[in-house]
Picture (cartoon, one colour):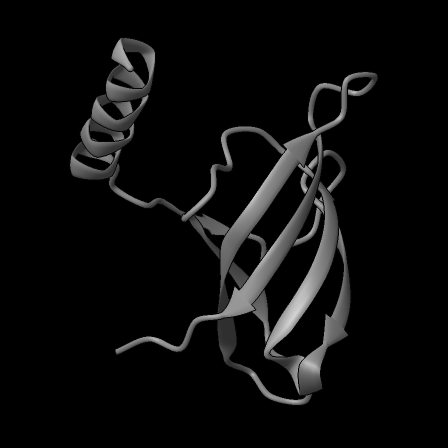
Length: 98
């Protein structure tokens, strides 16, 4: 029971202190790139990419195809590769700006 209470408290503290970051992937470069596979008519996607510091809840800013604007996705799940430290795999959701 005590361990479970500590886990709940830990999650609450993380939720209170977490401020999502926005990572700009509009300019592709060596070590800062990605692949993008859409699902659900573009509302969700699976991504693989390279770069550091991305966490669950953060936003990824990507170029919008066919127009000069950008679009934003929020990271729902992310895992970093154990073999290549800056490589990540993520599930993302379309996140239009308010």
